[in-house]
View 1: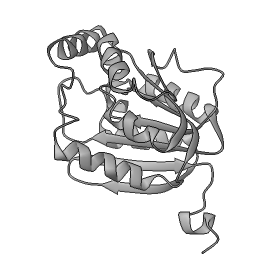
View 2: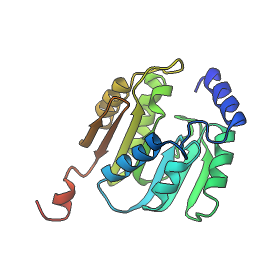
View 3: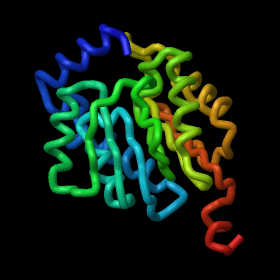
View 4: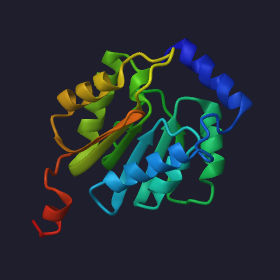
Length: 201
């Protein structure tokens, strides 16, 4: 992350603990519902959500996970996330700078990259994708969700983010959901559909 981004997020979370309106906007609640509905498994053992921000998605992911590690590079965001998840004993919040501080020894059956890919350079995102791929279990799932409209601090287009992830992960794309506002895509090491996993197809 660049110094500009560090300053930007420090100022944002210094003014408001929910700067994107994650708790109040229907757009954000609906997007969470779309993401959660797109996950191919009902439950996950150990998930990782870098870039958790104010942790509204974290709280919802926690309902589907036995253990959840969430992180952000901004200390202010992590403070908010700690408070938001204080009642959830199976959620851990840490400060991580990506890609260098990706958890090296942990194994995850779910990785969620929500609204962070476009802040990274192509090289940094490629490294994140490699680390994510290498940390996934045999049947592991990765989901990425990204805002489409342009903004000043964007380093990659959303189309470029998803193309790079697809190329690097070399995993089956189970879901791709495109709207005017965002793209959501789900990849898995287990290429079967949900019905196939249940033996109905």
